[in-house]
Length: 99
Image (tube, rainbow, N blue to C red):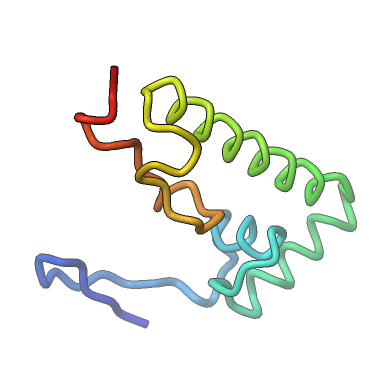
């Protein structure tokens, strides 16, 4: 499978082997993974069942830390933050909201 970045450059997506980010997405209940990632994730869980709990705890910490940083920047709970639970779409408040 190929994809293009914003500059139009093509790159290869390997869907024949598990990728750690997609396995992590699977453990968190996401939809951005392939069958091979789900099989790899289940195989890892057979070896260490606590991996899913670690992933969930890590995401919960990341969400709390992001909210705390936004509040410390003076933007309040929701200023500039999207509701999505994904950290990469979260944004800090605009500079005029900061102290």
